[in-house]
Image 1 (cartoon, rainbow, N blue to C red):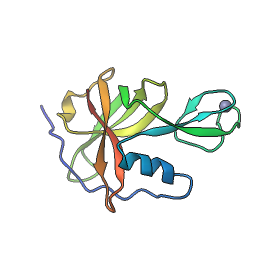
Image 2: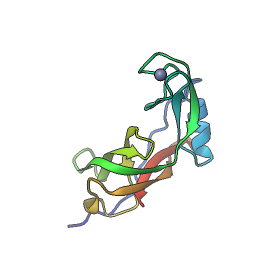
Image 3: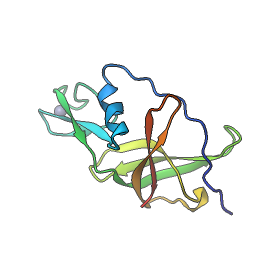
Image 4: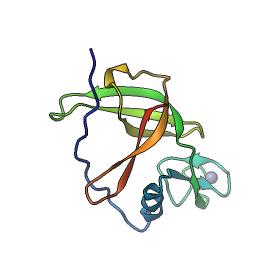
Length: 132
Ligand SMILES: [Zn+2]
């Protein structure tokens, strides 16, 4: 069986003062997270205060290289199937995202993936992953 990836409309993300630098970076093709200035740990999703020690954090550009931790293909939520996955980046943080531009039935745990972007309504670029 194979399920080809099909483009579907993406809702515009909520952009506020805290997330604006993140969305500006995606327009330049960069995925960014925040690292703690006190304990040096990276976390996801980006927060102003470190979830481990409450320290101040700063933006950091991530590699965009990762591995699928878990993946499932959703077929019932609408007419267009899509793959949703937890991807663990090489930096060690795990993010929930879509896997695109491939046969969705060929995706598997442990598979190497790389960052890509899809445009949402309003022009924001949504970070996603595709097989590396
Ligand atoms: Zn910290």
